[in-house]
Length: 281
Length: 168
Image (cartoon, rainbow over all chains, first blue to last red):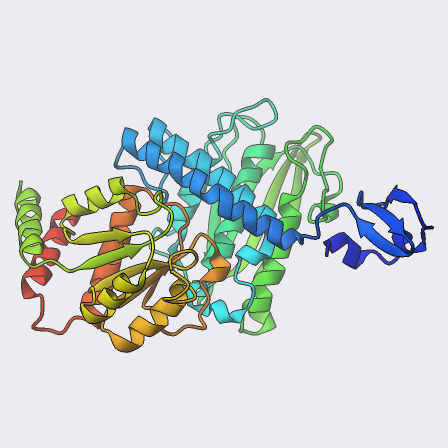
């Protein structure tokens, strides 16, 4: 059954009269045949649609990756070199793959604790930061920042040891946001604070002031109407963090969190600080 | 110059006494010919690639097991052989010494209910270099966990030399 039908309490379809063909508020067409409601939409859940999407598109992306390897056999998914055309192709496929993952939702992120084998996979933090710094520099348009000089002040030997797949995705969104919202020619800084077995990552950048900063983690919020994207990224981060914490067995004091602060520098300039805290290392 | 010599002699020893690796994935594009060619050039000379497990291959996997078996989950088995790749993994883990690797484009397939998996390839997209990096990690782990001290000595020395040649 469609997700929207499960959520719908009004059930206008059931209240309709015989012979009525109508659309409900969710855009689903229904026909009342003597009290028997026939929906013209396929009864497929969003989960199934998204899984199919991954299934069908992943092989296409792999074809692109394979062809890029023909141009340059030394390229890797783990490191993007913006001076190599074949590596840039890989970078572009990574962006598409990230979008598929967003559409597939948390289903792609270990639905429950039985997935602990992958949850403990180690990933080098610096490599992730460097990779997405380059990946998101590939997109150029008038709504994105140009000439950014992102500095990474991070120990190169630190591994993320828990839920690295989820943390990697959150990091990628925060870096994409730096490219979306920073002022041109600025110098964003990705910094870190190491605690006992944990680490806080701090993403600093200079942007125009955010008018309603409390709302930025709300679904579909956009700071300005002409901003890049749909304002979904930070909401998606909050969903991923919720999911990560539901899988994490350690206590609430060690829960992963994201926190935002803003410091006004001038009328049109603010310092934005996003802290991704309690990353297990 | 030194690393070239190490690399070359390493590869030669690996070739003389190779680890047998088998990959089964229904999609040709995954673990494709290009990747396997590059893996061969790196010293992993015995790699067999199949799309599906029929009764005769299943028998071969049991009676003459590979050192390393890389399995996809969905679409690789004939219905009379097994339900899916996970089922094959469980059976072979119980009956052979094969080091079993699972892979899938879907994270949610890679669950931990099966304790019969030695390694999981999580990355959905792989370049040839990434594949070889994975192979090195897998072989490393396999040699530690599944190959007894006296077996495949030639390969072990060759593999160590090859790795030294890469890092230098």
